[in-house]
Amino acid sequence: MNIKTNLALLSTLMAFGSCGISNEEYNNVVKESMHLQQECDSLKSIITSNENIIKNLKDSLVIYSYPADQRFNAILENIKSENFVAAKKEIKALTSIFPKSKEAAECVKQLEIIKKKEERKKAEEERLKALGFKALQQKTTFQVDYNKISISNISIGSLFTFDSYDDRYHYRSADRGNKYVTARMSVTSSSKYPNLPEFALYLIKGDVMEYEGSFDIEYARWRDYGAYLGNYTDYSNDFTKTSTVNFKIGKETSEANTKVAFAIVAKNENVLSEQYERFNNPPKYWTGDVNFKDKLKIKDFEKDYTLIKIYNLK
Picture 1 (cartoon, helix red, strand yellow):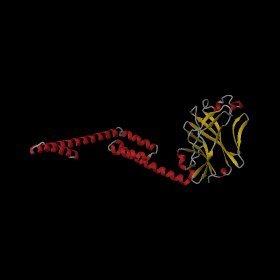
Picture 2: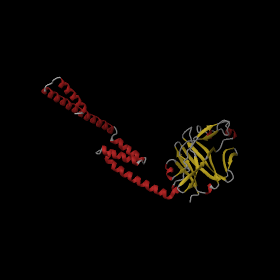
Picture 3: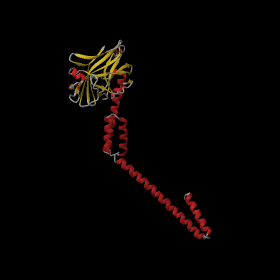
Picture 4: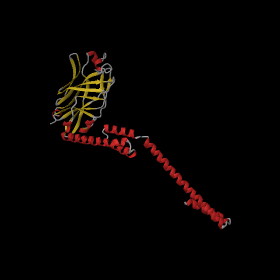
């Protein structure tokens, strides 16, 4: 019997007492009050029990709305993407909730697959750590979403040439004590209005690459001088008319940098967009904001960056 009930009962008894109630009547009131309290406590217990049953039923609905076959498919997807922590968590839940299911039995095999993949991944990480950047594959052809990129004719010199037409070309000349690292780039795109990736030069210092600067991107060639001026469209430089367009890329850096270990790196993002300014020569150009990391480690090349070429790494 709680405090409120006791107070109510005491008030009742005092009221009866002031009216000259007999002992028998008094005892009957006490018994009735105690009986009512017992019924109240019993009802509270039933309500609490029913609330627990409802909660358990809701939990069961949540569990069984995500059946064993769906859980197992999630496990396979996590293993495929090498998200082994999530896969193990799903396996633990599946085998706990559906211990006698065929999917739970299959989880034993999946745990073995995870173990082998983790061992191979660890071994590869140790190999890369031992060899450093030498262990990375250098790629002059690679894919960035809808674009296939091919890099060729990489060279180091005093000039960066581009925008050729007829027997003429435009160029930038490196300052005294500097050199240009240049290359030809071919982009084959499935999009009519693609964005393009950008390239950067990194200096290699031990197990870290340090950002030196990004490359300029220019068109390689125009049909003639009129096309270069924008008097009419050059279809060979228009992705709405052709799937492949040729470019030149160039980065000016100190001559000292070209004599130490350095690398040409691409960010695996299509960020640069084509712009048009009628009174520019040529009026079409590419620009964009590419966020290159200041320092790269080997793990950065697993997904976010592509190594094009390494120089002077002994």
